[in-house]
Image (cartoon, rainbow, N blue to C red; front, side, top):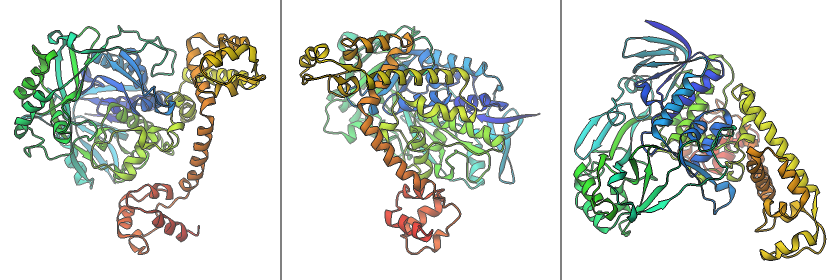
Length: 625
């Protein structure tokens, strides 16, 4: 049988859900194909969203009209803002989630989205004609015809799981692998390779002596992921627990390294550098006598806990024996051991910034198929791929984000320009414009762009307009109103700040260390009145935004100037203008890298590893610049 859609999305993980929702909400008749409708947006590893730089990505997804942030807030068991001791450019939200409710909430979103249809089946091939994708073939012998296709296959392409010497085909524990697509894509000319990731043991919290662990509570302030006016913390909030390994644990692991698939040659692919297995930790950091572990809840009413920090593919008996040597785990009961998984991915330099493939028109890749790791990175890619799949189906220009506009822009530019030699994970250090890409202002950066392409709805747009208006009104009070010495000097002296000699603008006083808006509002009635007039459910959010803008205005303005200068290079188009192989004035490595990537602009060429500033200058000279 044959059915027709505008956009077809293969895989209902975090990338696939965002891709399908975006395409459907923009007006495309969209089909989402998944192996199991009960595992939609499954949190295969840690049931948590956000973290360093990852939290910023989720805020950006929400600002653009995606749903990961909203679903996270509805499923959150614990919320924390990480990096509070650093500047606001580094603040990163993180939520521990109820795994089952996360799936249920995502499925509810998808099933309530107009134009979106779900089909439970396995994709086994693409329908390609004249280097243009035309649809998808499935295991149930159904042909789905589509104008564009998004592949978000996660770890399922030829997936192989490892627990000691035991090898099990699969994309996740107890779920089958997917075959056929890799082989077809290779025949079409795509370059593919293998990567490895892993997940830790799952523990029954009833078997843990929590008196020997340290409780780690969450936070209860106004922060959350979505900019929408949704209820805060709807689920029972639960603590996490911290504890450590010890030298006895390390000795147990060391003695059995020969049985680790990572060290006996069984696994040949590359794993994530920044989320290593416990066996990798004891080898790489052999001088350390302990490593931190975190017990994190998997459900509001579940006894299943995730042991963060103990990812492993060692045999079951080794994992269990090692854990039993941690005092709190003396009587431990586990639900299942940790395991490693190998899977196929495709070199992301084979993609354009829209995430459309260079070899097959209207075919898009998103998520771990591009060599990334993490739900957040997948969701960000999925959203952009879904937007562009809709635009491709309608024959319009593609949408992309710059490095100074979003962490999502940094992520995608890194992938398509530099490629990957290990699972890619986002960090704040990867972004050169961190002060412009804060978690607090993603809505002001991105919602107007989303509105322009037809994704951000009226509710989101109206909330943004209200926030902008309120921020400007409060900022105006800070710029124009003044404090008298008698109003504020006592408070300034109490925090070790110099007292005023005469009246001073509130905005100038706010720049002092130790002074915040609440400090001023307690002493200056006109500011208190302005704050009380703000919408109660958004008051703290607006106050924080205004305070950050005032305190960091110098840094923000300087970074904007730098970004504007580099934007000039972004507008110098070079794709198709050079025969790089014949330019002997540039280095051999640069020629090879430029031929492989075929950059769109001079700016992208300058970011390719192996292309030096002198190589870029030669290209500029050849263009008469």
